[in-house]
Length: 436
Image (cartoon, rainbow, N blue to C red; front, top):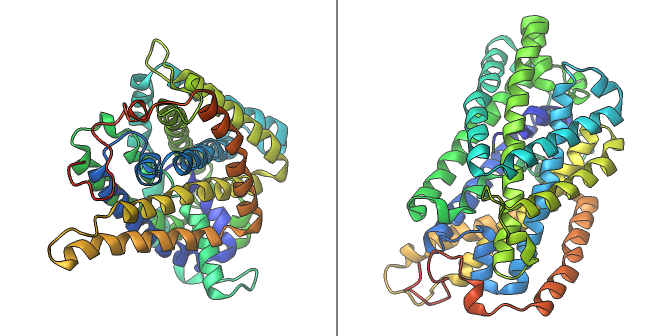
């Protein structure tokens, strides 16, 4: 979760000032409900694929395909946004990247293909990179958060409504922007086959991760806004570095820039890993082209990785002309939208798989159901905040997957028994208490 989003989001949220804290509160609370729902599903269906596997168990092939397709889109669109953020922070050391958009695009593309190569070298190599970046990423966040709260003027952060929107729509818009920083929470459900005691480990990780990230995000955002004026912050391509420069001069900006780059590269690495794993999960079920399920000698789904990175590269090239912050904003909205749809579908899958005939106290049965209902409604609420342009793009991308579905399933249909061969155990169906 803590990757590129928090390092550029203060600039995206600057026009809203302290109003953006409502977005963090709503997004964090909604994400917690989604985490609890996904955790309940992981206990019941500890199967590779996460939201895709839950949709497959509850609704069948076509809905599951659309979820896999939409989530896959969110991954390679997200990788594009992360690569743009990397180019923005690298401009601290190479100013030409900010001055020339073409050079900035080349730097973003180079980062994408570097980490595609790292992931093609195997999960062990990617895991080592991820461990190092995770350990190092929190330092600049804590540094700026503490300095901003102690030395900055929190009371001077304005509460603004730049488009004069009604309050519910304003909160939905800001929550949609902040949701980008929570995207990735569901990734813990995807490699369920490789997790020790997934029915216990996954729910615990989802809840602890969401609460920890929310605390870090709120403190870091307030810290930056307390140090950098809103008008300057809105134009910044590296807000944390600008905040550090006000405290420690050029050296502080460079140190924060290094920390941000490390964190962003870690997020780039993990999202590229997932962009290979999700299409492989669907390919194993016969819903994506079978070639995408193949592994190289290092055990990496190299075909899926290459296809995903090619699509990422195309998105970077097409959108970079908008400018760095504008390009980042469009990409995070598109990526978040195509992740919220799997969230909503997972909540619906939980309700569909619920055994309403289970005896016992009603509170035992109603508690998790209420969580799923709130998670579903929150996902719809956040989708509204994305706006017509992004919803239009997202709808087009989902519809674009239908020819692939019909081509793959009609050309080489796979027997149902083979479709579930990559599950840890039998897939749960409504009323089947023998399933996980």
